[in-house]
Image (cartoon, rainbow, N blue to C red):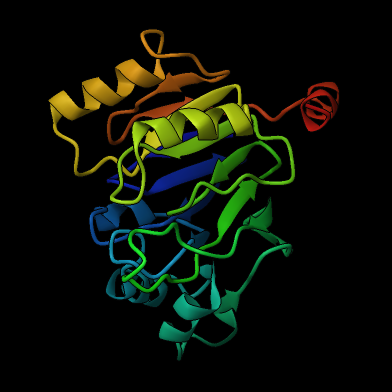
Length: 226
């Protein structure tokens, strides 16, 4: 499958002519949804979820399906069975992609700030989008979409997260608030100049596309035993 980066935390995954979009929020251009067959939403924060954008996309395409946590699904009332609420441990097929759901809560920003629900999505057993959390799935992950900058984490947290998940590749998302200096600093510490992780760290420019390969059964078994 092919992965395309859009604004901030949004990506599109394509395979065999089908398009799956994850977290098209308020910092993402609406064109990210062009030709989409299905949408996944991790949580309700504006930078991951735009109700207006999704409703407009659903009006344009009556075949568009949306999967999200219950809080997001409730805000899309009126779309009927086209919206499905999902939670930790569930599995479903979206636009031909096999999806499993991992995690329950948004990362803690501060004890005085209420937490919201957050789910992560593992796509075709290969690509994991954690939303706003450092969730470690109970499955091998080949390619991790890494929240590179957030008010709830440090680069130290990201290093430890990469070591625990142990993907082959990590692609930066959630980086819309970083300027060029911040991007270079984070990339340096997560790359060869940092203390070391098992993952190759990459940052895609908005609109750039890369190929994402699924783990072989042998590699998946080996990583599952790590």
